[in-house]
Image 1 (cartoon, one colour):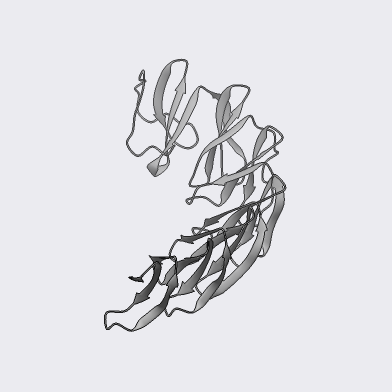
Image 2 (cartoon, rainbow, N blue to C red):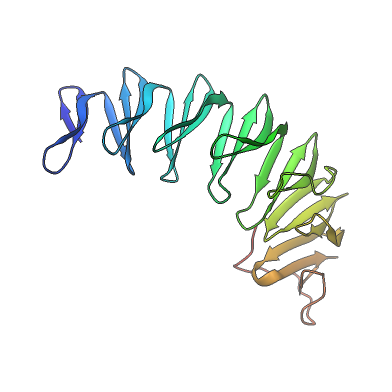
Length: 238
């Protein structure tokens, strides 16, 4: 970066100007520049060509490929070539594991792809998922359930007291104060009769019941013959 008086620009190692010395601030990101002038933010590519005009309140680089930008409380999305989605959502969270975005509009949450096409219209109070699974937890009117991230349909009723520990397609559910286990199809493979369930790597569970803990397989079968007061495993998935 170079500065002249109160203005900032960018030159390369040979002194060739890439960004004119005309901006109040320039932030150098990977393969792009976030520029500020008179309180407005914009974005230029690595050659100094415009990606976003100077008119936004917020501009953030996301995952070295996508850009989030906002104005007046609404958010849009761009890539290094230009705008993909104009500012219209109250919230956007990019999840590159699935190439989808969580969006929020009128206090409801949905999903869209990276081109801005709606995959799941905003209808839930919250959506949450794990990069190892093709299922997502949803929250609506005080209850939880699961949807598929393959066809974006509900695979369980939205009737559980809680959903947690989503990992490798398995999920822990809460019903009347007790925990059970769901598979990737939303089927209950362990009944809600455990005080706690922790999903570990290699398809191992730690089940806790009646103040005792033990290792088990995904169908609840006991591994080994020992019961413990507590078990802690470094590869736990919380």
